[in-house]
Length: 337
Image 1 (cartoon, rainbow, N blue to C red):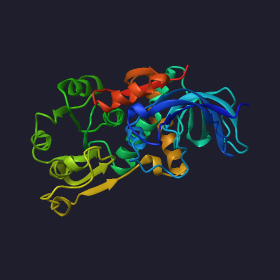
Image 2 (image 1 turned 90 degrees about the vertical axis):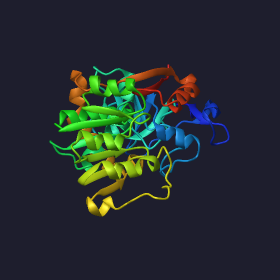
Image 3 (image 1 turned 30 degrees about the horizontal axis):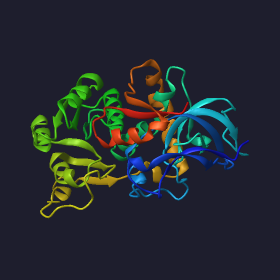
Image 4 (image 1 turned 180 degrees about the vertical axis):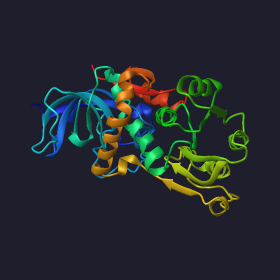
C-alpha cells in the first residue's frame, strides 16, 4: 500500500481560490481504531471550505489540513475496532472533520452510510453536510413541530434546499425564503414547495414577512448571513420565536443602533451552532436521523438533491470560484476519476 496520494493543497497554507492545487505527494491517511479508509469518488463543496482556505474558519483539532467534509466512495480497509455493518468494497457516503478533497480519507464508521443505488456518486457526496446541518438546525436547535412557520435565509443554498423540503414534509404551516433573484425564489417555491420568497435586493424582507403573517412573524428563522440580517431577524421573529445562526457571511460586528429589545419583548431565543465542532457521538445521532427520516425519501425521489455543476477535481479552482459567485442553486461537486 503506497504511503502517498494526491490531495488538494493550498499554496502557502492559505489564500484565494487560485492558490489551490493538487499535491501528488500528500501522505495517505492511516485509520484510527474506529475508522475506515475510503477511496473517494466525489466530494461536495461547502462555504466553510472557502473560509478555511482563507484561514478564517475554526478548524477542529482532530481535522487534517486538507479541505472537505462530505464525500462518496468505496471502503478500502478498516481500523482495529470499526463499527460492524460495513465491509471492504462497500459503496458509502459520509461526513468527516476534514480531508475529503483527496483520493483517500480516514473517517469514523459512525459517520458512514451505505450509498443507495438510486443515488449517483455525485448526489451522495452532496448529502451529508447539508442535510445533517439542516436537520440539526430545524429539529434540535429550532424546536420545529408541525404547524410552525419558518424562514430559511439563502433559500437556494444547499442547506436551505434540504431544510425547505424537511419543513414541507413535516407539515410546516408556512415556509418562507429570502434569495437574491426571482429565479432563485421561483425555484424555492415552484420546485421545493416554499410558501413565498422575498428578494433581499429589492424588498425589505422583514417587513414582507410581517405582512405575510398578519404581523405575527415566524416561529423559526435559520440564518447564515449574520450582521446585516440581525435586526431584521429580531423584527421578523414571532413571540417565543427561535433564531438559529449558522454563519456570518456579512460579518460578525453589529452596527450602532441595533435594537435588542425584541429579545425581552418577544421572549426570543438566539442560538448559534457549528456541526463540524460537535463530537462524534452527537454527529452519529444526526447520521441515524438522516438514514431513518430522509434517506427513504431520497431513494423514492420525493426529496430532491439539486446539483448545480460537477467539476473534475483538477478544476477545483473553478469550483471554488463558482461558489464564491453566489449564483448557484444546489450543490457543487468535484469528481475524482
